[in-house]
Length: 293
Ligand code: ATP
Image 1 (cartoon, rainbow, N blue to C red):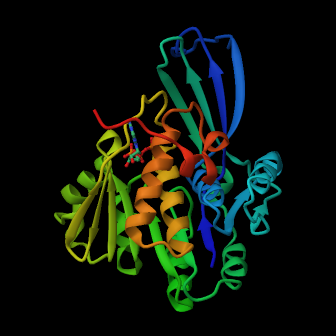
Image 2: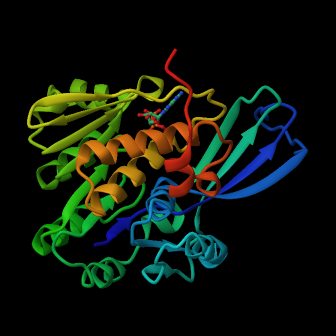
């Protein structure tokens, strides 16, 4: 089986600055690092590290060949990442000051210009029972769910960054919906519907340090967070999603898939960074957590 992930690929440019720049100010950064990011890329890396076969569907510009190569190094199938000649790779300029406060400028770039032919070519290789995963950082979502439904794929959506219209458009197609606590409240407030009453077979609400809740056939089951000392929660949700869907794709029952995802996400919050530090399956299965407080 395989996971076809229609997902964003971003270059994250981190600049360390003495303070966040004000209007009209020119400021010298004291440090610079570049990392692979984007919710789509993070989820592809997490699912590949969890030993699933992952086909990433996306696009980069001429400046993004390194990002595609990085995904390949993580074991992701990158044949269906288009290289666009005239569109920059999606990127985030992240200024971080000495107190850890940040200010971010995000350009979707190639993530909003993925050719429909790239999506169709990738999904033409899929078999019934494979997974289509997508998030809300690319375009082509409606086309993807329509193709996936015709092909008999399992359709999974991480509704982030949250947008009520985008979510409602794909809701009737979904087998699996994952949201964090804030996104779940926004969905309830803006549609008047509780996550349990959406008509989606499996709904997972992640609750940060409080764990995660799985709602299946109207029944809720909680998966407590493992006790760790968090240093950076960035990418915890993406790691959780990638691990959960990889484990399901590899035949694990949902309970076991979500237990493994909780372990992976707990390890992830003990690390600084995003895609580059997502733990591999050996680290996740061998990790020893302290007893709950
Ligand atoms: P992000 O946007 O930072 O990637 P998110 O908001 O999508 O994260 P969260 O709900 O914060 O997702 O976290 C996802 C999962 O990570 C949680 O369900 C939990 O299993 C794990 N997790 C998050 N924070 C902690 C923590 N402090 N300790 C242990 N596990 C955690």
